[in-house]
Amino acid sequence: MTKQQANWSPYDNNGGTCVAIAGADYCVIAADTRMSTGYSILSRDYSKIIQLADKSLMASSGFQADVRALQKVLAARHLIYQHQHNKQMSCPAMAQLLSNTLYYKRFFPYYAFNVLGGLDSEGKGCVFTYDAVGSYERVGYSSQGSGATLITPFLDNQLKSPSPLLLPAKDAVTPLSESEAIDLVKTCFASASERDIYTGDKLEIVILNASGIRREYLELRKD
Amino acid sequence: MFRNQYDTDVTTWSPAGRLFQVEYAMEAVKQGSAAIGLRSKTHVVLACVNKASSELSSHQKKIFKVDDHIGVSIAGLTADGRVLSRYMRNECINYSYTYESPLPVGRLVVQLADKAQVCTQRSWKRPYGVGLLVGGLDESGAHLYYNCPSGNYFEYQAFAIGSRSQAAKTYLERKFEGFTESSRENLIKDALFALRETLQGEKLTSSTCTIAVVGVGEAFHILDQETVQSLINEFEIVGEEPPADEATVPDQGGVAEPGPADQGTPTDQGVTPMDV
Image (cartoon, rainbow over all chains, first blue to last red; front, side, top):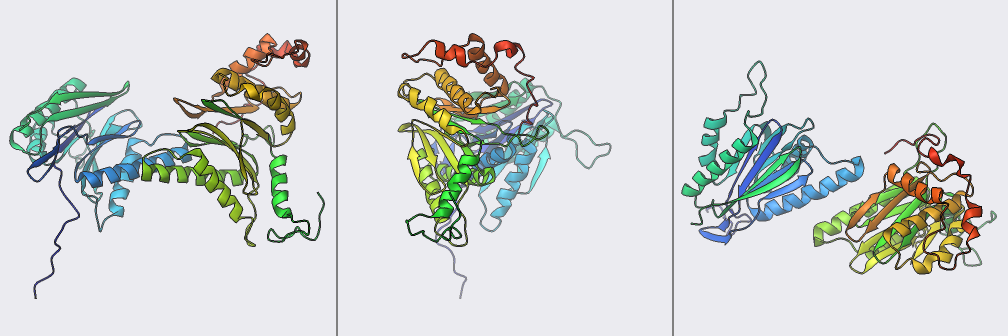
């Protein structure tokens, strides 16, 4: 008697890639705008990036229905926080909240691969990277999604964030200027679009710094 | 109102068909410091008097933001008010989450009223001792409601609750017909004038009052002290008549003005309350 198998899956993968890079006083978050299912394209203009708070942005690839549900939960929790504390959540606080929210559904996870980016309470750029059930770490840069396997080694080569195990302790922040980081991100996606079929169409880049928030777009390969 | 044998329980009727516990709860509202609300076609202004129990303490928070489009000012047991505000905030968040649109004000006040009614029909509960002026905006325009401990609610063009609110109500009754078309600035000025009526001689400064506004294109927010103080100065210095009053008796404004000698030092009047 063979084990009974489900004849449907509650999950789907809508593809896409997300990248975030932290600087000394800025943070760059980018994601492509292609949403796919199987070998088909559902949309060429779907944003995977959301602003959760003044200084926190989240980009998520994976199953976009779960991503949307996760975004709504976090937005509601942030509103409650604002009512109780009379201020916006800091990025590290949001990072912990995201981790807890993901783990809450440990046994029916959000199929979402997230990168959280923003400015910490000192104004320095911070990036947090997650798995589907909430394990997270603060890093200098990160990539998630279908193109991550192509982008991460490239970023390692260019940015080489020092290990947190090293002594003396080094900053988890890359010594890159804002425009250099943006160019790097554009290069990453241009390369990923060449070989990853789920990445392409358009690139949305959001830059967060002391003067506020800014968006840039770049056309990518549409095939 | 005197003590009698039918007022021990909220679930006991009097022979005259009254629930005394509920009426006593409404008394608690009348004892609280004044809260005022006014609305125009596009804006709602909430104002309240800040009462600090002593010079050393901060004043109680009486105006709460419930959502971007709704705010509430309270009079009576402020602890009850805080709890109800938390309930209202939750309801707004849950509605937004499900329907991706703001909770209509009329719906919120009904839910609030039903919640208050429950406490008038359970022997193990007591009525909420707080009156709420709920001001908000939705698709059908600007609204101002008053929610009672009894579970009743009414919509108003302008209203005042709490101690010495009758003085404010008298002022509002004179002016309310002009409110619908009133500008945002005049509406706020009218609120300040009405508030001043309840102070009856006491100096109106930004440390003794709180003003909040919500309007078309303007999320609910409490005005900061400097803004309020400059608005107060504007009309005190000019010795101004209450705005947009065509049937004005000219000497009414001038005679009623409190001593104009201290116009120059408005900001250091008394103890600045701790800002929450």
